[in-house]
Length: 99
Ligand code: SF4
Ligand code: SF4
Image (tube, rainbow, N blue to C red):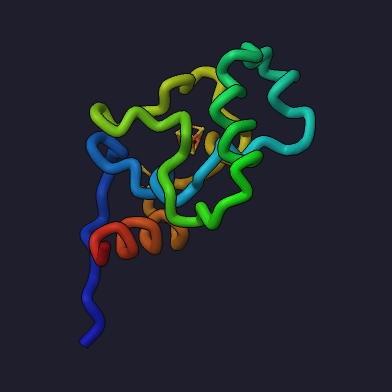
């Protein structure tokens, strides 16, 4: 029988989706519309420049101690649109539990 995940109502202490999104998923130029400070993009540029297989690395903006986005007010639209309890949310949680 398929294992099910509980329905949850908060992202507190989760961050599973952020742990499977290696860089903030900005559309081209979107970071300028949010007035993201250039120094916050250094880690992003470094990870891209490393040209590594980073599909499963946590987002460079994720504080892994608090499980929170370091620049939450400046996060990309894709992060704002990501729905808790959506299929992708549940898939992320499922994958993280399997790690
Ligand atoms: S949207 Fe889902 S996967 Fe992402 S932090 Fe919230 S509960 Fe976790
Ligand atoms: S919410 Fe923040 S930490 Fe999570 S994927 Fe988006 S930018 Fe990265």
